[in-house]
Length: 426
Ligand SMILES: [Zn+2]
Picture 1 (cartoon, protein in one colour):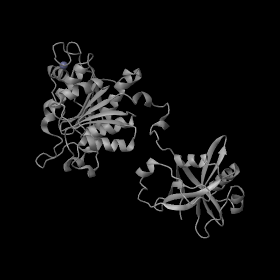
Picture 2 (cartoon, helix red, strand yellow; picture 1 turned 180 degrees about the vertical axis):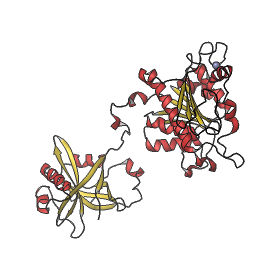
Picture 3 (tube, protein in one colour; picture 1 turned 90 degrees about the horizontal axis):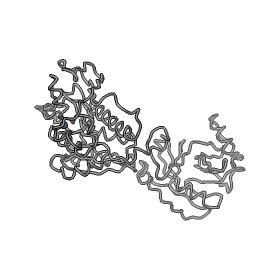
């Protein structure tokens, strides 16, 4: 057997510690390709029955198809000196002698004659249990790495206080459109430790989507909201996702209360109508809304944040642009940059859409953090234009980014008093 790393479920470790005896057998899965041993169960001393411990993550783990070898190893209580000398020997790529190993564990059983026997030892170091993994032969015992794995780990615990993960766990972020941009935004939101998402999209995953969508092709035919939600929740078990396979335009009655409950709304759909409706509903709900899209055949991305009561809404800001002599990019959004039909090939590439989605997610997170009192999260402006590819021809300001990855930040005007969306009382 060639193994050099082992996983011990916390529930098994705790059961071994709770049992007063000094040794027992181990049941394991062994993956030779990975050199990995996964402990699945244990026994108490001579007892021939396996002691049952429920370990949910073992059912999800990639090693699940590997059959369990019962009684394929031993666990012992040990003297702390064994762990120290075993570690020192390991650092020299060496082993402790079998005699030394035998003298420092309780209930020693002879190892297999030809193959290394897998062994776990546990001792107490500064009041805490310390587990070690070993390969034991008649020639000696070589220590190797063993980690105790929590049964319900919080993915973001290692971030500690370095990121306000606890404050970001409860705000609800609603994502409208979970296509190429939206699914990337969802991944990023989850990466920022957002734990409450609502996904809105009436579409199903079609074959042509996989050129750019983040979903796994095995999910073809499913609603995008379900495929994206499942992928995110497979990674973060504590993530809550509300799934709405609905159209923001036709299902406005469901959207209104949802928008009011949301701390931020991220609109990643590409139709003018859904952007228009989301703009209106978000403004009336008084919720910050971030619009993400790719314009001009993939030449640049735009991420625009509307702050109800502070900035103009999406459509008033477009009108203000036109008044200044610039173009209104909204109509081009209906040209169908996401279709990928033969007569209308996909113009924006997946990596760029992904980048814009992640940029938009960061804008949404900054808005939430700012509202929670993290004032240094304030962004340089409300509209970011991001150069993705050299444009065919130079556009007017604010869309005049000429270089790939050039980001131009601009401010939006004030709300228009007469606008049914951003005007009046919100
Ligand atoms: Zn307006």
